[in-house]
Image (cartoon, rainbow, N blue to C red; front, side):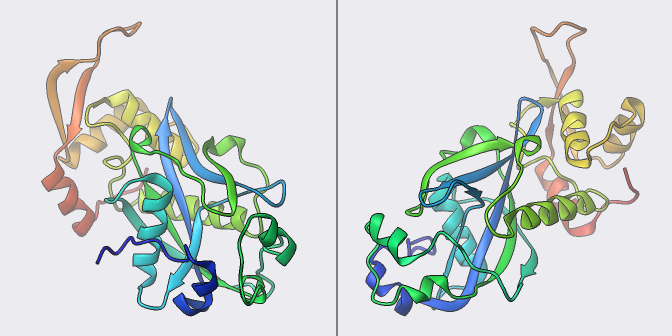
Length: 257
């Protein structure tokens, strides 16, 4: 049986299918037009945006639940996924999940209080190639869209805190692991790779130092092709050496940016 089979299609069985008090929230990052973007949902019930998330089935691990949620929202089955924090504020609850709102949306439950209980949430962040994602809303949302990180203001509940914690974790990861394979197309230029790192870090990097350091890790392959149609001298295209990239994920990298 597929690990990504949807849970809760029959809402009358939701309480029997899922664990009480436990959920997952996913921060999905993409990179497009030199912008770091995050996938957000617009609520049907209140004028707020939220991160993709869901409940944990009684026969699932939290990792399987997060993978299922992400497949339902993005259409992708193979996603770089990293668990980074547990959010456990005693006052955590979703103000939109009230019985009157559920009934308007056609969600019928025997016990509406089940949705309004306190849920501890396991946070995951995912790195995906923007062009491969087909955003799909869930039953509680009217739309699912990409938003630039700089465009995001307030989010539902503690989701802004979850997003900020995911960014902090990803920035720390850059100190000891490579990032880029899951965010960039197969072929890219050195300036495009540098822009990705600068966008994640939120600061500029010296061009020569960046190139020298990233090449020293030997995780890139320079291709004979160049990027055509640019204003300046056509830069060479690169791609990741996947075997060495995966080994660097295991062994780690040295030094900071």
